[in-house]
Length: 411
Ligand code: ADP
Ligand code: MG
Image (cartoon, rainbow, N blue to C red; front, side):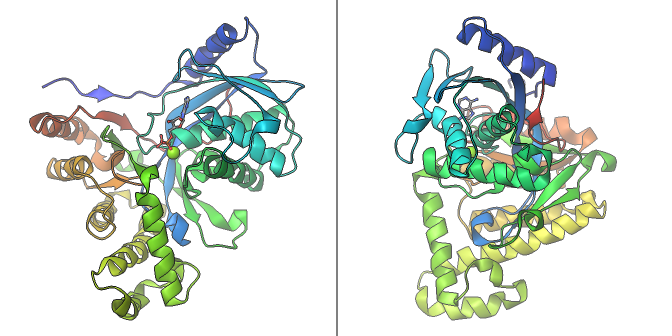
């Protein structure tokens, strides 16, 4: 069996060194105004709940995307990425609009576009990026990219939004608009809130009910697995991640239809103890049972998220395994967004001694997480590696995910 591949995070110095070098190489030896970075995220629980007005509980990864940026006086944006070698991406901000730009630079230029749309005087810039957040692994490299750019532009233009949580919520909103409207990826707001509003040693409980103020919508929740001698292990399955290909939109549309039939704005309004009644009311519109299974996932997942947040706040991290397991089973059976590779990680990790395991992110590939006793990490990793090997799957990547700090200036 091959040795497991660990996806290590970079220190701030290493990230800064990399983007400074790339900046000089890309822009004739020039110095950037500074270096900023933003983390990817991993969601502990609360999947496919954000667009249902529900709860999610992400934490920031130690893995970050680094940006070196220098402001310009005109409205030209010039970009390079270590993850897109040889490709210089250029656009004028005046030409950025929904449907008008494509490629990875859309995530970056989209942030500037959204800040301008919110009334901020944002001009062009030269920037380079480098990242240790795995791409397309359900760990939000896209939000890490947007949020690193958002804090960089905030700083360079003296907007001071990153200085407090309400301002960070505004930056997150700009990043969401960039992703939805300019990059064209229909996602909820969890990823950007996690990247901008987390703090080290905490998860952030996101409440996506419509109409909440920014401060009501995110609450830090102490989350310290190490204190309980536990580790959050992330496994990047490297399976296809086809969220954008219609499945996500389909799930969203189904939830909207259910809400309409039930006469509520979002499924959040269906309380856990009202679930059976709601399912009865949906029965006549639901010959194959799909609508009811989707609703059951959303309502029970929101309840599990609240319960898990309460447990970790009380320092009972070791007791959350069954909630993680139930979340996975619900996503696999009721919401039908798991994948063979995710199920294999989850089943193998549980059998090898994990306290709980589940897929994380939107599904159809991407990553799974397992809560593991520190002394058992190597056993769980070896078991997963072997299980993938045995059925001829491409080797997965492994990450450790102590809850880390939010986006900000690095150097
Ligand atoms: P995830 O957010 O789960 O990693 P997404 O499909 O949402 O997956 O986002 C991945 C996309 O984001 C990439 O295909 C690329 O367009 C863009 N991206 C993210 N990080 C970078 C980077 N460092 N350099 C260039 N593009 C990036
Ligand atoms: Mg993404």
